[in-house]
Image (cartoon, rainbow, N blue to C red):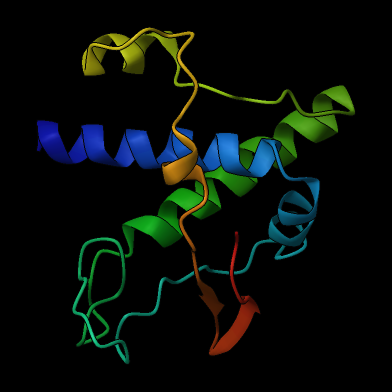
Length: 129
């Protein structure tokens, strides 16, 4: 469980950086409102029942959950402050857990991975690059 929580926190903070650094992606994410976001891997050539919903459709959907958490947190920040702070690195707590400098930027290789979002069978954001 500890490793899983760490993996989920890395994804969450990476998504925070990705969306705060790209206004068009942030706008698209916020426009999903309170819709459920699903990483649909049921039709994919790979079976990812951790980050996605898996071949059976009953996977954890950890990516979808992380995206909804990012949407909620950044939406709340925007409503409270009228703006959103850009994130470029991991939080101090996570950086310490990973044994890296808190001021180190998240590698671009991680930030530029394509992420697919599906909501109620409708592709919302075809890809993020």
